[in-house]
Image 1 (cartoon, helix red, strand yellow):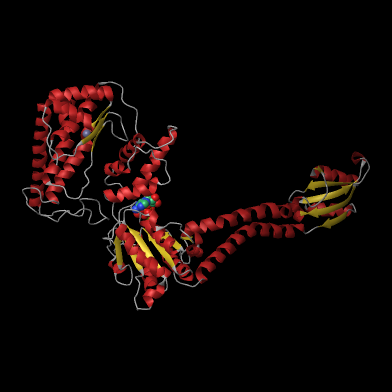
Image 2: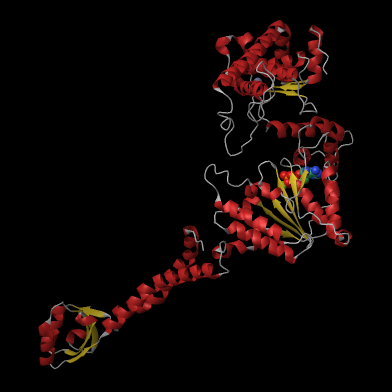
Length: 623
Ligand code: ADP
Ligand code: MG
Ligand code: ZN
């Protein structure tokens, strides 16, 4: 039984409120009765009462409140000679009063009202705490008694809202494009869900679990839904982070509920998104273990073991990193199949664009080919977003079909952020222009650098100016001279500032460039074996996601090597810097011309840029 104070508070709040109203509203008349215990509406002082008594005007006395109050019936000329009820507050010690009353033959009546009033007072005061306590006991009992074991905290784990069930996802394989291998893998599963007898008759066991691995936005969720849609079976989904909640043990009970519901609805698909949130390698112990996560994971493993392969429940899980998953999850009989879903290549992007262009009005002159070419590295979600942004821009401009302008604008927006307003002409605008032209000219004149796509002074996102390079398709295999060219290109901005404005005038604008430069140089040395240290891998990328970068490798190499690494990084950057300064110095005339042009036009297209440069110097033949 686990009951956090937060819940306690949450649940007792209504009781407190109800209690308070009952207390105030319901008992108030009763508890107030002690003041209202007579119908007397006029009052008199004790002294006056004694005078009345002496005059013989008092006929009857009713004593209340343990002798603190009296209501008298009196008659007299001052009272219009009619019997009237008058209320008198009696002093604490008036022992002679009773005698006096007797002497005057007054009818005395003592009412023991104080007791009943006290009783009601007591009830009134107790009822509210009592209600509260009963309520809490009730809650504690409930959480204790149900089915025992962890995870029944107020039956939160049972709430239907925690996983979604879609009877029909409405998504078919045709909606998923560009990941054909993954699709093929799943076609078999669809067949199993539709016609299990094909498999069972020959004694085949269908995998219980399939793990989809791939970067965000590549269509993992979409694919899982498509399986359910194609097989027309229900789709249960929950995300790993929803499993692990603040209530200890609830994660495990959710897993149980999910599987129970799924089995009732078999055949069906259970989809667990972000499974790395629960399925991380257990017992790494860094930063304290997470018992809750382990419990949830254990429950998941138990459930997966607990059903026969042929019940028609197939678990599909998604993650963007399979390397950190607990090996127990990947054992046969669990997620024994892994399907990787990657960032699409050119062909993939084209077919994804085709899927998403279907319901959009795109001008005939726009070729999806060009868009696919311009978007290496975009995921399926990025591409869907790109077309949607372009459609929004088109609508905003009141055009009736999407043209290349809107597409370009949308691509730039997705990569670099919202467009800002251009700077007014000033020294800093001039400096930014030199900085950008510096990047662009170095990039253009180096054989191994990507081509300039455009240079612009229109700010976007954080950047005050931008130089765009045409991304190359193959980002995976990059040669040493290509990395060096990139380092020089990135240094081009700062180098131009140095040459044109002098050392004293260089700005902070290059900080981002320098970060990239350093990181590229470091990776050349420690990861790619591209330095004099030799082909050694000294650092892995992000091998331990629980630690910050760089922290995990603190002692993987000796101090001696560490000094060498720093030396090599320094040498690489130094060499590139000198070469870059050289390029800027040698092309000062063209740079000045280009800067004037850029300040006037704000944007220079890559083609035009190259044409201008080619008038002054030879352009390298790019590979
Ligand atoms: P993931 O789960 O891998 O992070 P999603 O499946 O949630 O990605 O993808 C988000 C959206 O991106 C989808 O709804 C779809 O519109 C689009 N999308 C992503 N990948 C593809 C694809 N391969 N084919 C078509 N659309 C895709
Ligand atoms: Mg997803
Ligand atoms: Zn820069």
